[in-house]
Image (cartoon, rainbow, N blue to C red; front, side):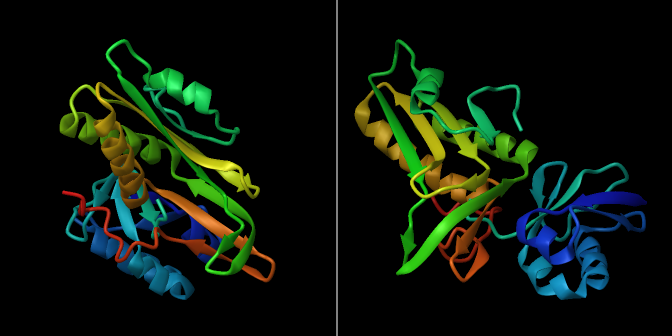
Length: 233
């Protein structure tokens, strides 16, 4: 089989490619794919080993069998397009709190909580000049919708909207906005926190911190990263 693999963020930077064509035997698994990529890109072998893989926009373990025609991507450790549901988006445009509130406002909501994540200048004493965000748009939107479904199951009657900006962002600019509308206010706080934590865990969005003296792709910084496990359950 001959398939194309998409690379993002640090993996794209380490390999110098956004897409790579690989040949695999019938019945090959994700583990076989990893071995092929490490052989092709030895300088990126360690980063590839720390990454996850997606097959048809779903996270896959090493035993997952790859079939001809599958959509493959390497998902580097995360921090954190457009789909049919306009509540979820990846955009290069500035974010608007008014617009995201409108997406969830409804007659049954007694509370609407809005979370806005912004670019800060100092982290652990180190000065950030700007941030650069990158995403796997199609999969990111799909995962946002899955987070909303989880929330709506845990807190019935909740409406959720998530917008994340990509590209270069200056200090104090908004990078992510989440709005949750709930019948009662207590649920809005709980659901809003759940949404941002899950976004960091499973949505393929990467952040590159650019300092005065260098830069680095950052993960979620909340311990070992495993998008196949929900630590909030």
